[in-house]
Amino acid sequence: MSRRWIQNPNRCADEYLDGIKDFIKFARRYNPGATRIRCPCRRCNNTLWETIENVGFHLVRNGMIETYSIWNLHEEQLDHASSSNATTMKMLNLLWILMIKSWILYRMLFHLHRSTSITKGKMTYLHQ
Ligand SMILES: [Zn+2]
Image (tube, rainbow, N blue to C red):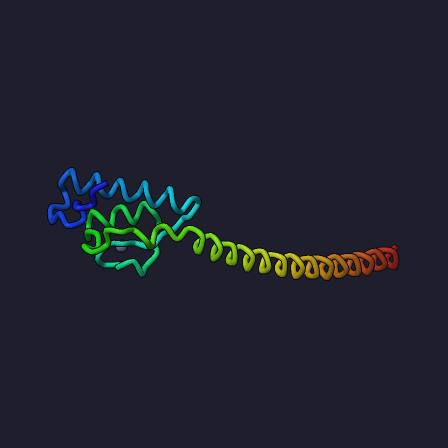
C-alpha cells in the first residue's frame, strides 16, 4: 500500500486521515495488547510512548515524521512483549513483597488486639 500520504502537507485531506487510520490499525495488529506505542508524530519523533488513541490525535495535530514510511519501529512486537513481560515480573515481585508485609502487619495487629482484649477481660474480671 502506498504511504505517500505521510508527505501530504494537508492534514485534513481524506488521504491523510485514512493513512492515520491505517497506521493505527497496523500498530494495533503488530502490538497486540499494548497500551502504549512509540508515537511517530513530528513532536514525539518515535521516542515518546503514547496510548494508541493519543498517537492518532498527535498524528492529526503534529503530522507524521515525513521519512517514516517503513514502520519498522511498530513491528518490534517481540522486543516489546519481552520487555512488558519483564515489567509484569517486577510488578508481581513487588506485589508479593507487599503481601508478605501486610501479612506480617496483620499478624502484629492481631496479636496486639488479642493482648489488649485479654487485658480488658482481666480488668473487667477484677472489677467484678
Ligand atoms: Zn506524538
